[in-house]
Image (cartoon, rainbow, N blue to C red; front, side):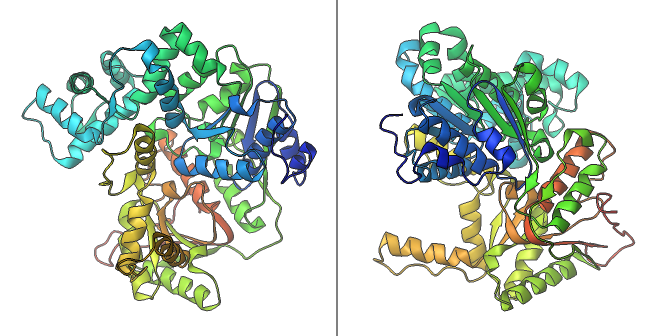
Length: 542
C-alpha cells in the first residue's frame, strides 16, 4: 500500500519468512473467515501479527480499517509493539474489546443521544450496596457479600441475562444465587442496580459493550459509521469470548466476512466469568464456508518432556477430541520432577531452596515462577522466599487491592486502568512483594523520573514470580514450580466429573505449559502436620 512503512522488513514477502508451514498458511490467508487453533507455545502472536502486517503491506488491507481485539491491556500492548516492529506503526488499531467499543461510542454519541456521555463508575461495589439497601435494608453489606453480588451482576450482564430472566436461569443452573440470596431477590437487586446507575448518570465496565451493541442495533447511521471503520477484524483469545462479546463482534461485522479468530479450547479457564470455547469450536459452522482453518500444534516454548506431560493431562479428558495434541520443536530436556512434602511450610521452603540453588548456578530469579491454584497459598511461599534471600513479585486473582484513583483521568485512560485492575493488580502486588523482601530502593528526593523507572525495572528483573495459574496465563518462565498438586487444590474442591472438573484440568494444563526448560510438581500431605486429614496426589497426575 502506498505510504506503508515496510523499510525495516523490506518487501511484503519478507514478513512471512521464518514461519513454519502452518503459520505461513495462516498468515497468508487474508480473505474471508479464518480460524486459527493455536496451542500453547505455538507462536500465536507471531503468526497473527505477521498476518496483519502482511495484509497491510501487500495492499490487500487498509490499515486504518484494520481492528485487532484481545482481552487484556497487556496483550493489546504487546500486539501494538510487535506490529510497530513489523513496520505498521500505529495505523492499525490493536485494543481490548472495551477500549475499542468505548472509542466507537464516543465517536457517535452526539448523533445518538442528547445527554452527556455517562461517567464510568469508579467502583461498582458502592452501586451494588445501594441497590441491596433499596431492596432489603436487612441484607448483610459486608465487603465480601457486596463483591459477590456485584460479580454475579457482572456475570449476568456479559451472559446476556436480564433481570427478568434471572429466575429461568437459576432454575437450570447454579447461578444467580450470590451469597445465598434467593434468585427472586437477586433479580430485584439487579434491577435496582441498573436503576441506581441510571439515576446517577454512570455506567459500569460492561455497560460499554452493552451500549455499543444497542447503538449498532438501533441506530442505522451510527452503526454504518462504526462498521465502515472495521474492514478486517481479528479476535485473539477467542476461547475466552463471552456471549456479550460475541454479540458485539457479530454486530461489528454485519455482512462483512473478513474475520479471523484465534484461540485454544484447552486454555479456556475463565468459564466462571462467562467465557466459553463454544464459539471457537462452532466458528466453522457459524461462518461456513471458511477460507482457512489452521491448527498450530508445534510448541516452540517447552521441552518434549513438558509437552508430553501436558498432553498426558488432556488425554484423560472425556472431551479430548476438542483439544490439540502438541509436538515440541525443542531438543530433549530434563525430566519432570515430582516431590511430596509433609506440610505446606515444608513445601514452600523446599521450593525456595531449589530456586536459591538455581540462582547460585547463575539463573536470573525472574526466570523462576511459583504457581498456585488460589491466592491463599501464596503467603507461605513469600515467607520462604524472603527467608531464602530472594525478592519476589506477586500476581493474584480478582484484581488484588485496586485502590488506585481513577476519577481524574479521561474516559480512555480510566477504562485502560480499570481493565488492568480487573485482570491482576500486578503493579501494586509486585511493589508489595518487593517491599516485604527488601526490594527496589526508593529513589532519593529530587531523583529524575527516568532514573526512578530504571531502578524499579532493574529491581524487577531480579524477582521470582509468585502467581496463581489464572494470573499466569499468557506468561512463560524457564523454570516453573507448580505447588499444591493434590486433591482439593488441583482440582480445587475435588469436583465430580463434569464442566467444573474439566475447567480444573485445563487449568493444570495451562500451569504446566508456562514452563520452558524445567517443571517441578509438588504437594504437601497435610497443611501443618496436625490432625488425621491426609492429602493425596491430584488425579491429573496419577
